[in-house]
Image 1 (tube, rainbow, N blue to C red):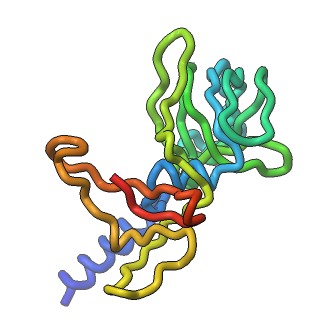
Image 2 (cartoon, one colour):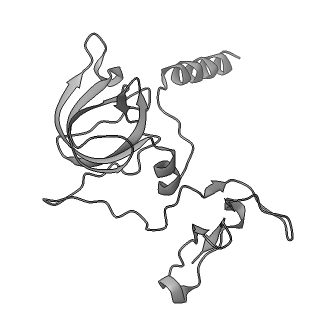
Length: 192
């Protein structure tokens, strides 16, 4: 009995010490569409929140916005904020160039690890990011499976019905189809 109590106590202590961020899995298109802004920016300086232990401290990045893909953001100097890296889905960046995306709160740009399209720094003297040319925010991807003959919701690609493209399109291994908008039908569907 004592062993069971000790094991349960150890589990409870371990669980109480676990901190972290839990994100729903989503793809680049969904993250792009859900973002209020998407920019390429160079991180010039980092300010860490005072009075809070380092892993939990929020950060403010002084950045130079180089390119704006989405949102009402001006090129030039700006500030991007994030929560603590260890506990609240914060993002730790270095003094490099990144694709940044996120939400705007009280006029400030915010990033978090759940919404970031990529964490990798961009390379080159004139960095760009190659978005899939078929990103279209008129389409939504929903985690549903449609039965044979069951009607599909308008402008929705059902993740349960996503197909793998034949090798003739992309070679092996086969690539998953992309959700695309079709102007003529004013609807979205999977396409290779």
